[in-house]
Length: 98
Image (cartoon, rainbow, N blue to C red):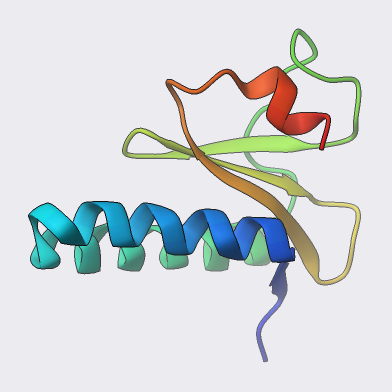
């Protein structure tokens, strides 16, 4: 049983990331997808790992990095809720307000 749930927004973000990478390297797209999926499984097994970013949001979310991407999730939900998957260079504050 999967112990995490992607919000519709996170699913779109993940799809966009993988499609973007696949245009240049299908092999790298598979690698990134696998690493993100493995990270989400790890987060589901050990909710609360990662770090809070109180400078970005006061919401009860955690951040976990995979390569240059950030997984933003809520550990207080069952299953855990993946809110966003974004590139770390993006301006995160406006994304978190959505």
